[in-house]
Image (tube, rainbow, N blue to C red; front, side, top):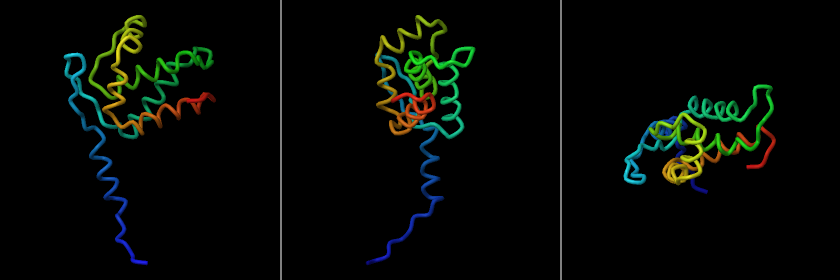
Amino acid sequence: MNATKKVPASTIHDAARMSAGKYKKVVWRTTSIDVAYCLGARRFLDVYRAIIKDSTSPDGECMLPLIDFSIRINVISAYTNVVMPDTVEDLFDVVYGSDLYDVVVKNANTSQINALINAVWRSVGGDS
């Protein structure tokens, strides 16, 4: 068996860090938006915490119907330069009345987004 040259962890780490924070210009319905390929570790954890917080009532109860909504809002906010509306009704229209979330998922690191979604669902004891 021939020995192969090992790739140092630092090489892989450097390549991965180059992807974090890189944006791709995407035209969505005649509007140019920036979509991040992936998030750094701190930002990833901040988004995870925001989803959990947004899906939890003041008395600490998990509100399962809000999890998908919160995931979509936070993914759009974290991965793009889109300023989200302030009202729940307008947020609902953006999240479920458009394909913006799908465009973000298509252009970002889908594995990272799936890991985020899976982590959220595991933390609340649900299925992703």
